[in-house]
Image 1 (cartoon, rainbow, N blue to C red):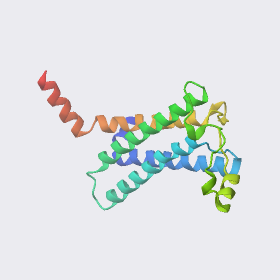
Image 2 (image 1 turned 180 degrees about the horizontal axis):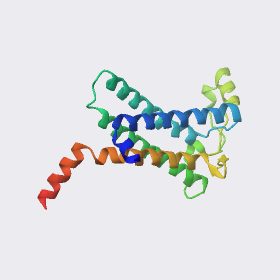
Image 3 (image 1 turned 60 degrees about the vertical axis):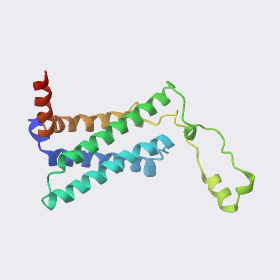
Image 4 (image 1 turned 30 degrees about the vertical axis):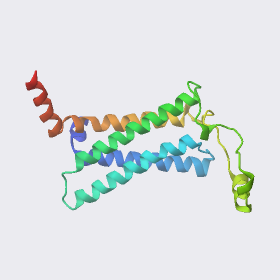
Length: 181
């Protein structure tokens, strides 16, 4: 039954779009209402969600004006973007578990500023700047937010796979490769 729903490209796009909107809304609610301060990696992990929302919004507009031939293309781009999101999240989880080094923007080092460029505005912005350490995870129910992001990103990639694998393009290339052997 679930594969019948997934086979419909626009329904899959809608599920992916709603999932991305819920994830971003949750991130901002946690940040602004519950005091979860995002580190630089957390902020970078939001970018793929914005990209997918933009892609699927364009797909929705094209679908509404009866241009349906790009559905598969937008699902493919969304899947690639979310695969990158899962890579970012996995990297962040590795940083949290100290599997690898932290990128420079996540390190809790002091900010170095050239004396010549210091102005009042710059000093004020530096005072307000909070350098959040990426290796200190913020957890909900025992899992870090980066871990949740990894699982959600992988879910979206897996959700789009049946559509991509059952596409005419994939089936056509599968037959061509089968005939070659």
